[in-house]
Image 1 (cartoon, rainbow, N blue to C red):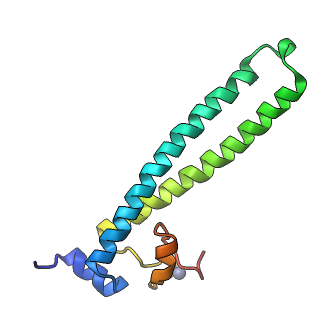
Image 2: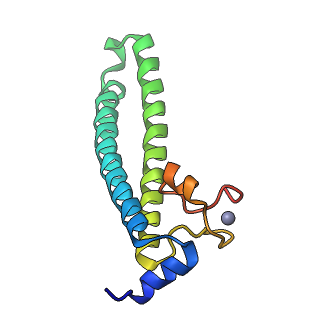
Length: 129
Ligand SMILES: [Zn+2]
């Protein structure tokens, strides 16, 4: 099978085999699905905790109110890091498509494979992160 221009670029730039690349793509797609499920869970939880803030102040236990504020703050943080993780995954998948996967976004050097194996969505090397 002849290599397309993109495939050749990938092999040249990241010294990665097509098989490795497909493996990363599979991992990233799985991660993307997990993050979507997590996003649903987090927004359901947020809706749940929002009802406490919307309920009548007088009927509410003040401690419970504080609890709901804390919960929502935690949820907002989780949703935030979840969505930035989702963005990283999309960015990494985009890099696979355009043939720059495994190349640092900042310095243009190859990201070492062990780093990608631990964190397939990495788009910058350790030195630049
Ligand atoms: Zn770098």
